Image (cartoon, rainbow, N blue to C red; front, side, top):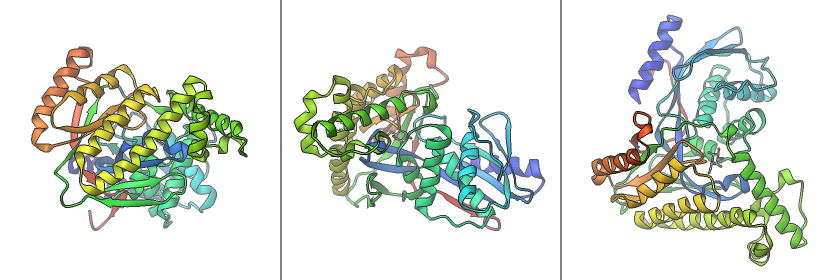
Length: 401
Ligand code: GLA
């Protein structure tokens, strides 16, 4: 974390010949249970991790936003009160989108200059929400705007939905804003209610392992939105069959379908809709059971639920790719791994696992060897990381750097 902070900091000083006004940090997130059900009003478990996006930033009095990324070429530049309506299709769309949405509700007098850097490869850890929230934090600080946590979440989600065009739910943004170190976030995405479940004293030590497939991804070109539509179509069908009132399709979610209606009409659903719906209802149960296991400090049970969740994503939600599916099966066979699954959407990117730290070296070797045997062409692209839970978004201001 510190070396990345130094990279941004040093690049800022080199570029602007002055110290930054501050450093904003937004963590990445993992979601061990509750995959692909946030957009349907489901229940999710999440954690922020101690790796993420840093931005060394400074105020710009002329209203210009000027940010360079240490991960991507090209410096982005736009005026904070004159953002183009259409996305460009690059990483900076998240900056443009959130500045545009924020300026509709708040007077943005100042722009921001900065250097931004992510600490891990892209895919599965929600770097898109992290870059949005990190930048939003800096932009708000220089403009003296104090946002509540729910506003951070709302603007970041709207950036994805309305500007970038990904119909995601609130999982990523909520984890990256609300999470607390050593706690599991238990979030009901329908009501917005949440609880931080502290890990009990009897819970054995664990670490979070990230196994990167070597394939980076963007959700914009995946089947993410298609799956969301399939879930909505299924909810429509079930409610119509049961003679229930329903709203516009865009406002319809599987959570609105009573469980007895699902059980009664499930067999009438087209097979593909039935699979998505089975995933939804079983994943909600796993997220609830997982919270109970976590409260009890039972990592073995929690891990078992994660493996079941991973299988449901493969078989019922059908969202893996061959490389991630192979990593999933390797994790299942590796001693010392409590449980694991695709991290995030799972179209490309990484798998995550909760591991027993005593087995770390062995896990590192076993997973790498088995994966490289299946995908030798990904040598040099595959990578793995070990991290811990962390607090949500934060900023350190000048004088405390
Ligand atoms: C992506 C989306 C989230 C969520 C996950 C899958 O990260 O942005 O809203 O749907 O996939 O659980």
